[in-house]
Image (cartoon, rainbow, N blue to C red):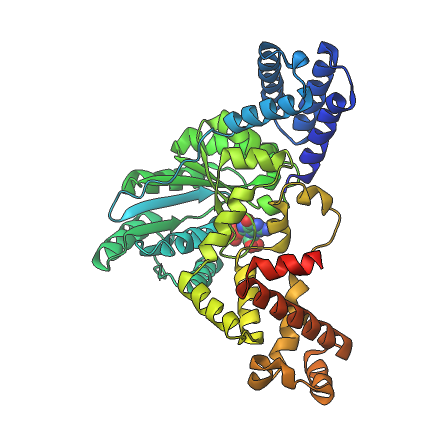
Length: 440
Ligand code: GDP
């Protein structure tokens, strides 16, 4: 995410970090680089200029030149200003209605249908919400099917009416259906066009006026940069929407839309989409996003994701197994699955400060665990719970079954063994034995 911009900003600060003595000229030079980086990221020139002017004023106000670490202070000032530009605080969506009606708008291909599914899934996981998805694209039967597929994936009911060409009527019927069936959130996916056109705008406005949604969201592909900002403006002029959803941030190396959309339409970005899968959705936190843009990682989000996957009951069971030395390959597989649920590897590593930059050219394969999984799947239940019994001929069979080599099987067994020892040590005498081992 935002690799290009992060690199350029890093270079801009280098101007300051590299110099023993900081002068007003250096600061100006550094900010000029920041401005260039923003413009290259497809941030509107005026916004970029205002941005650096504000930072400059703050910098001079704080007497950056006299501080011990002017480079760091500048990074902080830029971070604070970026956070402000992107909206300051995170803003949630209005779920006060019963049902709360959420209307999705945006161009075709922006990721509306995908996001509708993600949002339904996100709310469903909150336990108190029972969403209903509504297909209102009356022009493309394929779009209706797509929503049904998405709904099935996340286990949320989808409402559609075959043959009905009136999206206003469908929306109203859907809301009535929701009331009758205890759905407390209704998410309406509407038809988009390839570009802003009058017919589409009139249609979405008619739906909007007829159902008076609690929340109208505008979905936009962040990779389209300034176009995204212009489209947002056109939709906002007609719909006066409540918030923006930025999709495809996983593929966005520039970041211009994320940075400038708020200041152009004066509406907050509420969620972001970071992948094609149904769990690739995050609340938009301006300050965390600023950290990411500046290559500082996002540890808070990383910890939160880990917590979401943390199941206390499971953890206790696992601990017992470890204590009894009964941690087998099935448990290991389970743990791998938990990690995978947290998101793509590249995404996770990008949240660790510095790691994103370090690993930017490394191809991190999400299938990295595939080999390991295949090996474990080729083991019999007995072998999984008691790996000790895996002898040479069993190894050969497992390698063959998983399409790997005996060496790879050996390596996994060895690692598993080491892991077992480590776990026992952490359990038993706790840190003491570990310390002894480290000393010894
Ligand atoms: P719609 O026409 O607005 O409903 O757009 P779709 O939901 O059909 O999305 C268009 C394409 O973008 C599909 O191939 C999606 O899988 C893809 N897509 C949607 N959101 C994301 C995202 O956050 N990241 C990535 N990489 N792809 C996405």
